[in-house]
Structures are given as structure tokens and as C-alpha cells.
Image 1 (cartoon, rainbow, N blue to C red):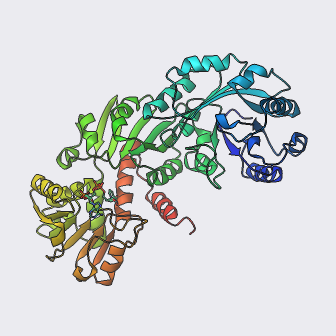
Image 2 (spheres, protein in one colour; image 1 turned 135 degrees about the horizontal axis):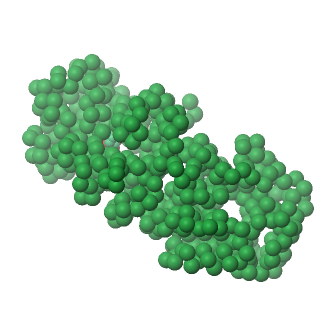
Image 3 (cartoon, rainbow, N blue to C red; image 1 turned 30 degrees about the vertical axis):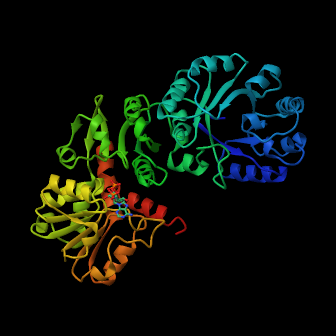
Length: 496
Ligand code: NAP
């Protein structure tokens, strides 16, 4: 096997025939290592048949239910099968601690001595590692549940500092980035799901994402790490636009989604340099709370009270807000007017959260007369007071006739695509309607506005512009605009 990091696809099938057929398909797709989860087979485990037809290098695993597997047979029978697999030609065999203590080195099979902890990440990982390594291990594998983002840091530190090849992964959504970053820290391989059906381990990524999106086989300790932090984070499109752009320019950088619960934010920022992080996008719920941890901020961030971009330079963290300029540029591009031409125009902003703050600030700077409305009137009043404009009650939003309406609420966002923050009957010809929601691109509000003769501005434009500006702050390179646009469109319509 080559020295570059390897993505091992975990394959669990009930029928032996299906296991071999799917393994062959994976080899054709370029998969270099497959884990046979023999505990998934519901028919007799015929090792002679399997190894006679083995399509490529394998790790043989036969887990008991207490270790997260499905093997229901007796323990002596399990150990016998593992011994036989080692002699039959397995490239690796996965031996839990107690099995490794009972099974000697046999044949040419390399010994992965493993430990799984589905409840948490033990405090003394180096001691645990030493215990497993002492069982004649060629590779130590630790898979533990991350209960905090700091568990990931401790696990990756172990992988980086171990002299024996070590696969250290944290399970669960919190731990998901370790499946990529372990390879950056020197793990010989990491595990991926086939992509078809549910992953076999919690937080596992698909082979396709690990290979094509995160380019795991090219990772090295020199690879710079970027990402987006938020909670929840699974829906974020940012990795889908930043990674193709980095790849297009041949940059040794990777961009990952990091689930960071509010309580973990300070420790995650402390750990960021050790994780190799050089820049982050920031999304809900951290855009405002992040300012408490940052001292170096762009004047716009201070004025808006929210940041969506962090850049590490010389051990300092700099905060930026690319939403404001992205929104103004999107408006200018769609209307053919410069932002100076917004002076004196009336704008109604729906919502009073992070996006609204950036847009109200930008519009005020351009000289527009802004009215803010929000479901929670206190938030609208607070924002209006800070920006020198007026707040109205949510129920009164249809009463005026503004030149511009901007939706800064999530109403209309997938999957609630039939929702809209503004009644169609109140949309008038000549109005400019800007929906910051970008998934779907054509929201109900925009479709109704178009039908009413309004000029429409899509949130997709704003999303791309804020991402492009972030990319420039992260890399110093001009953003490959078309690559990012195509990647985002493709992610919205995967079948297209
Ligand atoms: P946020 O800080 O959570 O603020 C959301 C705002 O929407 C609040 O004023 C909230 O009112 C209001 N709201 C939420 N659910 C509502 C409902 N069912 N009915 C009426 N009002 C509701 O979020 P944000 O960061 O400002 O983001 C808001 C939206 O902007 C996102 O969903 C996203 O689609 C969009 N966005 C787009 C871009 C882009 O680049 N295109 C960038 C950032 C954001 P309460 O205070 O009463 O909860």
C-alpha cells in the first residue's frame, strides 16, 4: 500500500456474495483498502470462499455487540475465525484488547489493536494507547465518542505524537472532523462509509466526500485547516463551495464543518492553532457571541456587532463581516444601481438577527431610510436604536410601501418552502425584493415578487459573495467565482 493517507471503506453486508460484489465495485472506484465487517453476515462465514475471491486489501473485523458489532456466536468461535482470517491472507485484522491478548501473531496479517468507547473519550489517552500498543500492535486504533470539541483535540494530539501508527477517531457528529484530520496528523488510514445507506459508525463520512471534497489522500501536516463553526452545522453549504475553490487553485488547504456548541466556543478557539486552523467562517449561533473572544476586529464588525469570518495571523485572531458588503454588492448587481443611489430610499428589513444587523448597517451607511420589523419587537427596537432607524411591530409590516424589502428571517428556507415572510398582495410593481434565504434559490417570496413586477435579488448571490470575500481573506487569492457558483448550484440540484 502506498504511503499517502488511505481511506478505508467499511463494508457490512448480510450476504457473502453482496460483500464481494460491493468490494469489487469499490476497487473499481479506486478504493485501496476495505474493512470487511464479517459480523454483519447473516450466513455462515466462509473464509475460504471470501479469500479465494478477495478483490483487494482488507481489514478483517468481527465485532461483538458489546464492542458495537453484531457477532452473536460464542467467543471461542470468534477468536478461532480471527486466527483463521490471519492465516488465510488478511492484510490486517482488527483485534480488540482482550482478543489481542489471546491471539498471537500469525501469517503476514498486521495487527490492529483496537478499543471502542461509545460513551466518551477517556481522560488518559496516552496511557490507554500504551496498553494497546504493548499487545504486539502494528497499528493502534482508538474510536471514542466526542462529548466536547476538546475531545477531538486530545485524540488528534495522540495520533500526532504516537510513534506507532495510530488511527485515532472520535465518533458522533462532534467528532466527525477527526475522520479527516487524523490523516493530516499522520494516521495511516481513516474509515469512510460507502455512501449508500446509513454509516456503520456514528459520524462517519462517505468515501466520496473524503476523497473528492476533503481530498483526504493529499493531506499532510503542512495542510492548512479552515472551516465553518456553528450549531447545527450539517446543513452548511460552505464546505461545498470553499473546498472546490481551494482545489481549483491547487492550494494545500482543507475546509471542514465543525459542530461547536455554544459552551465549547472558548475552548475550541483556544484549540484552533493546534488543529492547524488558519481561518473560520462563523454561523448561527456564534456570529454575535464570538466577539467576546476576539480583540482584533474590522470596524464594520464592531459597528454591526457580529462577525462571520475569523482569520489567524501571527497568533492573533482577526474578525471580519463579509455579509454586509456581500448584501450591498448583490443589491447593486441586481438593480444596476450603485449603493450611493440607495440614499433616501425606504427599506423594510424583516428580522433582527445577525444577517439583519449587517444589512441594516450597510443600508444606513448608504443613506437609506430603514424600518426594522421582527417577530420579537424588542429585538427590532434594539437594532433600530443602535442603527438610528425605526422599528415597527411584525403585524404592521404590510402597512407601508417601501422601495426595498429585505427578508432576513429563515421563513421560506428548505424544507419549509411554502412559507413566506410577506403577503403576495402587498408586493407592488417597481419594488426591489431581496430574500437572503438561499436554499432554495427561488423562494416563494421571490417567485411572488417576480409575478408582481418587482426586481428580485437572490440570497444565493449574497451567499456566494460573502463566501468569495472570505476565500480572499483566507487565501490571499482572488476567488474562482464560477467554480464556487457551479459547486453551490450543483449542491442545490444534485441530480442536475
Ligand atoms: P438569526 O440571528 O437567528 O435571526 C433570525 C431572525 O428571524 C430573528 O429576527 C427571528 O426572530 C426571525 N425569525 C425566525 N423564525 C421566524 C419565524 N418563524 N417568523 C418570523 N420571524 C422569524 O439568524 P440570521 O443569522 O440573522 O439569519 C437569518 C436568515 O438569513 C438565515 O435563515 C439565512 O437564510 C439568511 N442568511 C443568508 C445569508 C446569505 O449569505 N445569503 C447569510 C446569512 C444569513 P426572533 O428574534 O423572534 O426569533
